[in-house]
Structures are given as structure tokens and as C-alpha cells.
Length: 52
Image (cartoon, rainbow, N blue to C red; front, side):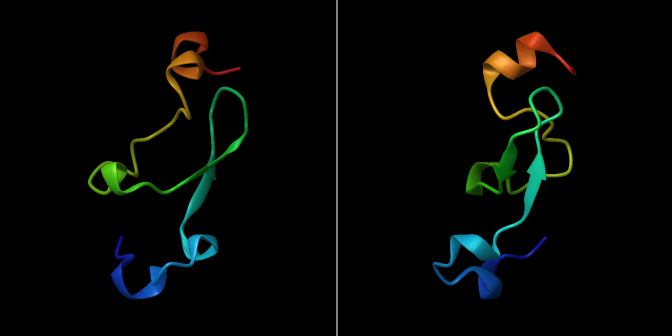
């Protein structure tokens, strides 16, 4: 995934996917750059709760 040219300060242009546990949308974060395909939960609480 390349966000360099598409982002330009516009957070609406970032990819979004739902949390597996709660269903809330998660926006792409820079710290998830190398693992965005494996990110499943939006928080530690959702990770503990597991898929709903």
C-alpha cells in the first residue's frame, strides 16, 4: 500500500476497515504501515474480547 501521494494531509483518503470485534471503522495509521493486512482489532480491549 502506498499512501505517500494520495494522503497529502487528507485523512478521508486513508484506507478504512472494520474492527473484527466491535465493527467500528479503523483508519490506516503510520505504525501499521508494514502490517495493515494483518490488523484486525481497533484496541487492546477488542483484542481481549475477541471476534463477536
